[in-house]
Length: 110
Image (cartoon, rainbow, N blue to C red; front, top):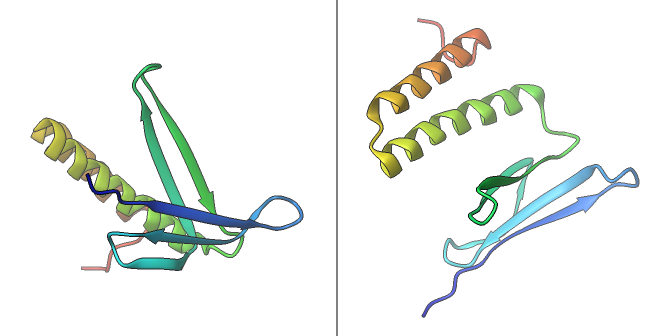
């Protein structure tokens, strides 16, 4: 059996606020790459609930955070579609992501 590791390292300032975040993925060829934000979700099957860690550095720009959330919404729609074949609900989520992007003016003007 092959093993693959993904690690996230967080350096905190004196107030325990993330100062730097790096991540590595043994199979992805990523080694201590800097990032400004990470969202990690794990499914606890015993408790039937989501366990989640959301971290961002103090220098993460607000506009970048808005884009990060938008792309996460689109990613959730894709995962829902691939894992459940709920095409209608996936499209509803994509439409919400479109609405979100328009409200925050994330998309180029037509």
